[in-house]
Image 1 (cartoon, rainbow, N blue to C red):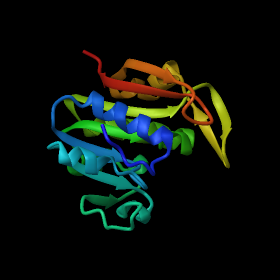
Image 2: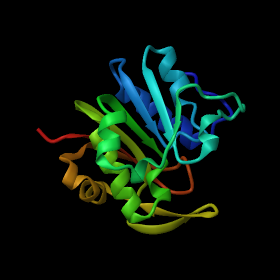
Image 3: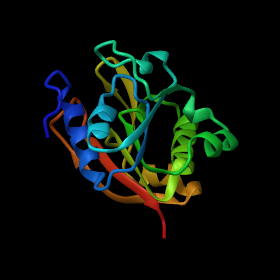
Length: 184
């Protein structure tokens, strides 16, 4: 897959992985889309995307071109009614390098709202730094996760990690790429 050469190496790996997990075109909710161009690649392949971010800059691509499918919203703190009324029945929900920047309460809200936004056969595709606790990633302090930590955040939603892999050597911290699905 040809991805924009100006993308950081971590994003090229994250987007390639996410796209490879989406085998059938469907509806995609890209949570934390600021700076992302994932929706452009997916829409060329027949997917329908909605992009959300708390930052109004999320409504622009890196090129400053406006994003037509953007909703500015504090997704992690939306109530259940708002999520189920406006963000429901997605086949895929992507959370690419987003959850690690939130506090624990917002991480829980984010993943719960992702689960509420999924169709019963939908998947949450998430990438976060791998490990336990807080670590420095460049100038940022970020939360690190392992499969057990992700499952704890998802426990109330009925979702669980069904597949994951740890990828090292593409950034300052190893990443965990995880697919989460409703427990059957």
